[in-house]
Image (cartoon, rainbow, N blue to C red):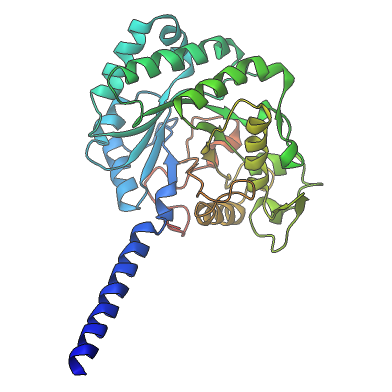
Length: 349
């Protein structure tokens, strides 16, 4: 009897431990979904080595840089921080018009660092729009993406390093209700081939999504609680989908715009989102603290339209940058240039 009890007890304990282990293995690590954009438009910022140390000490596991910052790349070696490596817009033409230039760029900025620097994405251009302020670069984005992709593929790294681009939400012609999201007719000839490439390469689209600017532009129709993730009830019903916050509605409008092209399924990584603490309407410390803290918690989940996977989000930005303009652009930092934290929340959800 005691022998049978011992065996049963041992089996139950072993089973329990196995189940606990499996649960732990499959438990989503929500903190890994948050990254922070490292901008350098300030004359009072710490050196890159100290910046990387600041990421590590604050458990920030992902970084976005906007150009091939060699100091940052060297500082990132063996840091275990995953990286979005940016191609600056002025560099697009050279990479689009010469495959040799792209091969050399990949050698200098990817192969010379990988895998000691965990380059996850190469973002070829930022917020290039054929009918926007950066329209002069539009013709170069896709061929630059393709040339860099081929150079990375030649090294067998196309499954580890995804080549993509970052857009802003001005490319959407309709975003309400989210299910009717669509790209503007005058950008379709630009964005559709990019989506086709992303489907082919199994790469995500990067998108910069700012509920702050949508709210500031239309505070009459958009409530502050909807923008800050603080609404306790559904604000917008869209068929079967209910939206308590503007971030999800904007992101799902982009999901729908991609789906509505009929080209294929593409994931979206939120490559920028933030809220300023000063410099404009509703740009207050309290609002920024609320939005950013809730955004970090939000990374644990998906959207109503795509609920099954946590959302990879990069907060803009690491520091207040005093050389940016207009004034509001100077106040998006999570840290002051002296490395002091601006807010009290942590970076793990």
